[in-house]
Every structure is written in C-alpha cells, then in structure tokens.
Image 1: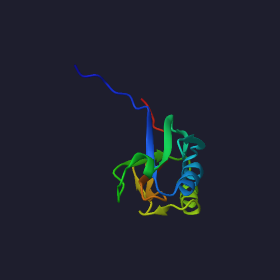
Image 2 (image 1 turned 30 degrees about the horizontal axis):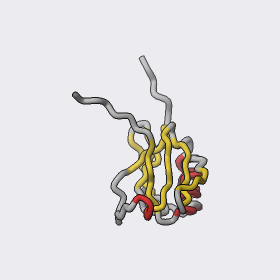
Image 3 (image 1 turned 60 degrees about the vertical axis):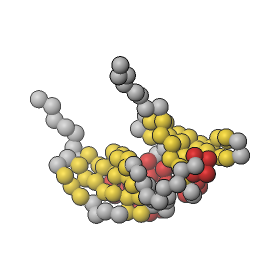
Length: 127
C-alpha cells in the first residue's frame, strides 16, 4: 500500500558554514541558529514553513561537486534580494527574466547550490 510522505526538513551540506548561514539569513530570512551535534556546529531555522538545517558536509559524508537540487523562493523584492546575494557571498548566474506574473533570477549560494528567486508581479485574480 502506498503512503504519502511528508517533508520534515531539508538538510543542506555545506563546506563554508559561516558564509552559508549569512547567505540564507540575509537573502531568504531563515534566522538560522547554531546547535551542537558531537563536535560539530549545525544551524537550524525555517524557510517558508520548512525546517532547514545547514550541516558540515563532513558530518553527512556527502561529496557533490555540483548542486543536485534547486530551491525556488518567492521574495517580496527581487532587486533587493539580488543585492543581498552579492553581499552574502552568493553569485547571480542568470539575467533577470519575466514570465507571466513572475520576475525571476537564478543564483547560487556560497557552496554552489542552485536557487531561483521569484518576485510575483501581481496577485492572481480569481473569478
């Protein structure tokens, strides 16, 4: 029998923990806070009602040269978010585009994980 799974949290394995925490706190508003596991310091917070943990990659034993997942976040102001990306050690990797009701841009965080930032241009109209 098939059972629906629910997502509890996302763990992002990182090489540069301080820069990653700065990025997600400034750009996404995650309010990541430190906690200890064995001899490691991890950071946890919430993004869009989803629990996020930034974990040293040594702890998870994950070796990946490129991002395997892409998060898409709706932000209130794309230009402001893109300024924060630069200040927080991320890189804009795509020109700003517009598609229907969305203005969007691809960026990478300090560890090279792919992120799409989206600004909704207007509220949807319902009939």
